[in-house]
Image (cartoon, rainbow, N blue to C red):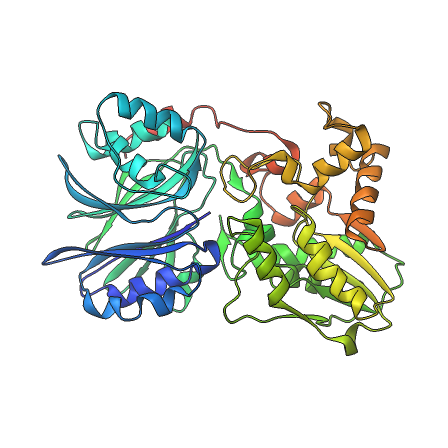
Length: 479
């Protein structure tokens, strides 16, 4: 996924924009971009950040541009913001989401004579596609709603024009958008942890499908949201920043609860050390240590400068390189000890096996017990780029090995109380070469998050894709 940030102020907003966007650097690895609207019009900058940090790329740029309203993005695929000069006037737009039917929408637009000038590693630039979709209607708000009518997937966006910053949350509420306020300024963000050091106080969590305009004078509601929501549960398990809260629920607290639930199931397990795979597994491990009473130690240290997440890069080669280089083992903590290793999830399993577990065995661990903070990932995410095929997933490879092919009936493999489920987990444990392996149950995952089950997207674990019936109708009611 990507991270988006927008700000309006009575004075120059460039510094707020710079730091606000930078606080989303954990959400994307490909591009960073900002757009500011000032007295001399739009100023836009986009840089490739795949081999560098947002701060270093934009440090000089941000000194040269000024204005009282702006938007920015840390992007996982597309170059953005996109600039459009339209019948609604000029605007810039940033997006966070994924469209399953992007190619179909593009083909229909080609037949109308509409062309695309931006490029993307995935073909059509999704942000440009969204921009050119919304300008086909009679007004801006109708255009945004038409986009929501047409897309298969989820897309939240920020749109900057002379009015201010329009903040639009996707109709499913899959990704969050939060509005904050400080003296003389309003901001909107994917991660409300971006507000804390910048002095913003949260004033509103946008509802799914809600459209709000912020400018230097305040906040104007353009469309109310709908009550149905399917926010991504993986935000709390892995993707989100620990200091962030979504729907009022803090990420770090949820991860500690996840670790506590895992420890409860391990009562009586003889271990010496509790550890987590840095960084996202650390919080789960702290919860495990607090519940079990076993010491938390760091047998694996992440060399933080220059190495981001190994989950988000688009190629396996880059994921493997980052995984190899970023974790440094400490033999003095590992040797001779039975170690519980907490991690957020097992996606493909190759990195955990080759670049985490192997390092512990090489340092002569006595036992390695892996504990995963969520259920086995069984289905690709249609709203995210990180997993795009069933064959990538460790759990589905296990099922294929056990069944002779991928099973059409996954019911028993989704139930942690069945023999088939236990065989699947045992196969994965053997494949990644660990002493024991246990996953969190889906019920405990939901309990750790603390929101009603029906308000959470759990599809990567149970395959249930909610379309939030009634979202389109509800989102059209004016305030």
